[in-house]
Picture 1: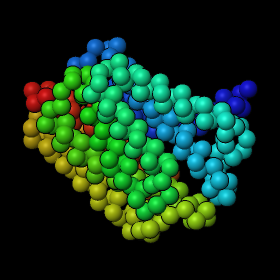
Picture 2: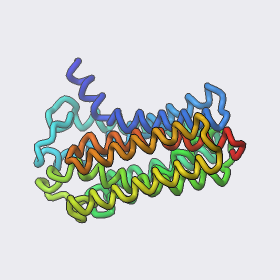
Picture 3: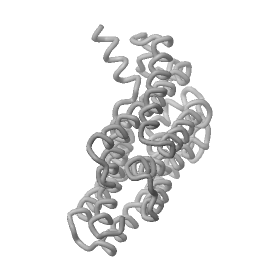
Picture 4: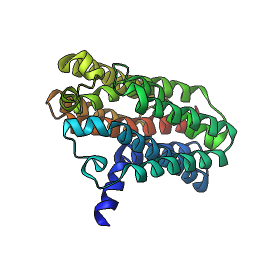
Length: 278
C-alpha cells in the first residue's frame, strides 16, 4: 500500500503542482479574496495541475520505459487504469471548483487545462514544447485575479506578459533536465532542437530579462518597500537557478528557477498593490 501511495504522490507531479497552487493562493490573497475563496482557487489549480501531470506520465510511459526513467507507471507502482481515473477525477474536480468562483474563472481554468493537455498529448515531444509554458504560466495571475475580484487590471496583464517570457525560460530549463533521456528515447524537444549550450544561453537571457524588468519596475513604481524586497529576492533566486544551469546541475536548476519566478510574481504584485496601483 505504501508503495502505491508513493507512486500516486509522484504521479501527480507534486512540486510544480503545489508551486502553481501556492502562487494562485498568494495572488488571490493579494487581490483581496477572503481566505475561503483564495483556498478554493488554490485547490482548483492544484487539482488541475495534478490531472495534467498524471496525463503527462500516462502518455509518456512508452518513452519513459525506453529511456529507463524511474516512473510509477514504468516500475509498476501504479497501473494505467488507476492513473487514468486519477487524471479524469482531478481534472473534473478542479474545473468544478473553478466554476464555483464564477463563469469567467471557469473559462480561464478550461483554457489553462486545455493548454496543459495539449502539452501532454502533442507539444511536449516537439520543438514547440516551450509554447504551453509561455501560454499557460501567464494564466496563473489571470486566473487568481479574475477568481478573486472578477476584474483584470492592466498591471496583471503586464505580469502575464512577463510570465510568457519566464515560462519560456522555464520550459527550456525543464527540457534541459531531461535532454539526455529524451535523446535516448528519440524525443525531440526545444532543448534537443536548440542544442544544450544554445538552450542554456537562451533560457538564461530570457530569465535575466524577466528578473531585471520585474525588479526595476517594482522599485520605480513603489520604491523600496517589503514587496520590492521580495521581488528582488525572487529575482536573485531566479538568477541562482540560471547559474545552476550554467554549472550543469540541470535538474535542480529548473526547480530553483520555478521557485524564483513564483516569489518574484508575488513580490511584484505586492509592491504594486501597496503603491495603490492595483
